[in-house]
Length: 371
Image 1 (spheres, rainbow, N blue to C red):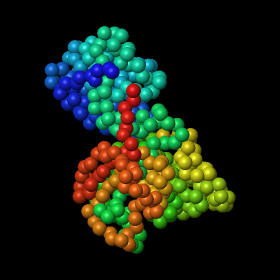
Image 2 (image 1 turned 180 degrees about the vertical axis):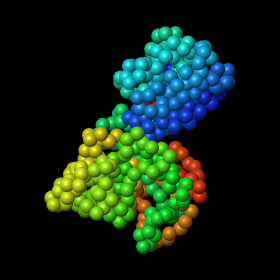
Image 3 (image 1 turned 30 degrees about the vertical axis):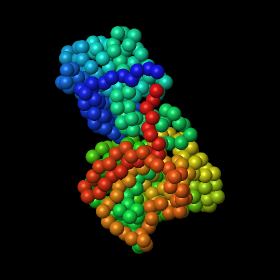
Image 4 (image 1 turned 90 degrees about the vertical axis):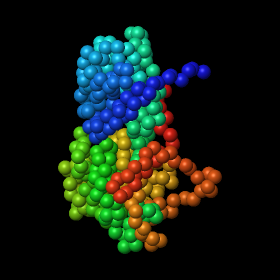
């Protein structure tokens, strides 16, 4: 059995900072992963950086530039293994060696076949290198990226829920604006910016007439595709999503039995239509069309179907301190029951306040680090 690498308290502190820095690339670096890096020596952080823009300098290079000559003999702590290939930028491993870094610590190895191997290359140049520091936290941060490198049959699917404390998504009259407060609504726009697509069900698209755009502090490098799972192709030219389909990519996932006349109306307005045999095939189709991560925002029936079919990887659950009672609209209608001993237990990865509301982030299974 191989020995578990030993990491110092200073390296752990640097990794926590690197994780925080990595988030600054949210919405701007896909399809690359979020990455943060810190140069440190004897408890002092000498330089820090993050991957800020797709095609721009990687986190390691930014941190080394910030540290300057002080990087010589220091430790570089980075969330993801430094790359060993020449892509849109030169290999980070070359920059690390040129800076005379003495030790490199990363959270997880890079699963990308073209980019991985940086630690081995650094060791061949006499630089000490170790991986595995806060691996679960790093893996959770870049879960969509890791998923995209191991699965090509569907996107990484996240379900966003906003509910009352008793699990309702609307009151008895169907009113859902606004269950959550302003801070939570601002956070949702930040969340949207980091996904390739935002999805809703057909009934939700008709009832709420959403725009499904990002209107927050982060301007995404590419606007998320808007996807409506609408088996009957009910959307019409007067719905906001259809009316703006030529400005922002809009797709409808309908069934093969959807009326041809309805499909033609959608296509005439610039909507791309898929007609898979079922929900799983629909996800496969949008993945083949370039969507590697998808954020589903409802409604309850679509979310419940995705959960029941085992097609949700992460849940972002915003719980608001309001009770809507037995006649409110349930968040999980008709979700199959299971005996307690057999019920799936999800993995909590984050809990925090969003103003008066509470965010809970759950993964269907642990985010395993790349080996």
